[in-house]
Amino acid sequence: MTNSQPRGSVTAVLEDLRGVVAAAHLLTDPAQLVTYECDGLAAYRVTPGLVVLADTAEEVAAVVRSCARHRVPFVARGSGTGLSGGALPHAEGVLVVTSRLRTLHEVRPEDQRAVVDPGVINLQVSRAATPQGYYFAPDPSSQQICSIGGNVAENSGGAHCLKYGFTSNHVLALDVVTPTGEQVTLGTEAPDPPGYDLVGAFVGSEGTLGVATRAVVRLTRLPEEVRTVLAGFRSTDQAGAATSAIIAAGIVPAAIEIMDALAIEAAEKAVSCGYPTGAGAVLVVELDGAEQEVEHEYAEVERICREAGTFEFRMATDAAERAEIWKGRKSAFAAVGRISPDYIVQDGVVPRTSLPEVLRRMGEISAERGVRVANVFHAGDGNLHPLVLFDASEEGATERAEEVSGMILDLCIEHGGSITGEHGVGADKARYMPRMFTDDDLDTMQLVRCAFDPDGIANPGKVYPTPRLCGERPRVVQGAHPLQEAGMAEVF
Image (cartoon, rainbow, N blue to C red; front, side, top):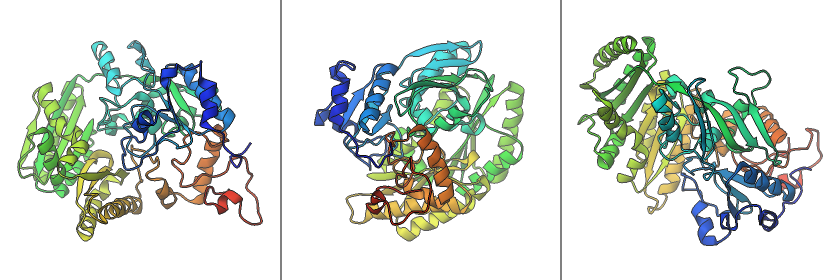
């Protein structure tokens, strides 16, 4: 079977699921369906054909088996906090919601593991592990509401990924439902299992390889000492120079974050975070580890920041002050709503040494196009989160903002970077994939996808610019494929 065959009907899936899933969890009312029409990227909206609120992994499998039988597209959704349209529904498909699978099965400090359902909230894992001296290191800004299943799908990072890595570095095993409806386990709880790294392939696959229904995650020991410092600078160039010097000194902080003047303005209006008055940029550095090590690193960071031109340098003296420093940074995305009616949250990566040049060019693009851009970024690993501000009620404003957003991604690629660091490709950036990868690259990626999902029903239309046909061997052909002519697929 290839995905050139006609798709089935959502109605057929609905009939299959009656008596399998509680009637109250099969949503067909348009007023209910519209609740699920987008994720955190509200610019893209599609009303799903059917929403299923699954209670168990077996129900997820039943939904997917029915979709596979009838060739109906399905999309998995957790808390819906994604920022790339990864959980955007299919109008003629099923949205499988996993937020009700929220059991935290085990916290095992003896082997630094936790076993969780996909609907468990990120921060809940740390709260459960903290009394036993551990925490879950990946910490997206949305960690109070985002789910582990979504973290797995998007390979989420966060402010502390500089030192501790992304979700992929903290997942040992997964129970998944494949696009054919089979329940399988990928990986083991052993630290270095033999064979292909299928867990690594699945984490970050954005729902195109199946649905995670359970995860064994790695827990990290709470550090002996934590110091969080805030440094105010007159410019992002100064803050960037301090960042490069800190890394060059052999220091690997848990986090290094930069916010520019516009982002600071928004944060102050939203949460009154008390950042240095008149700062063109603030640098947030968090150091953790053994007490003596942190003491030495702190002295070095202070010296470097003062040499780079900081005019205000302060350290949090307790957990409350540390939370106050982080409050401004963690609220930055939502805070921008205080200074702009509409905005695009972008996500790209550049080599750390390219930060000053890229930021200057972004400023020039902003001035040339008359579009304001607020900058918040994980400076330590060059992960930019430009916030492109606009007013959709103004004629042409949306188009100008989208143009600037695309130019920023092109800038990242030109400097040897990436079109995404942690938000994923989803529906938003699929058109940029050919700018970063060759046709051969994309074909190879598609072979992996087809191995898991030969019928192309798992989150179709995401990651790749157009669906490519599985089950058709690469060959010399005469004329175009009918779906190719219709602009619905590419043959490889």
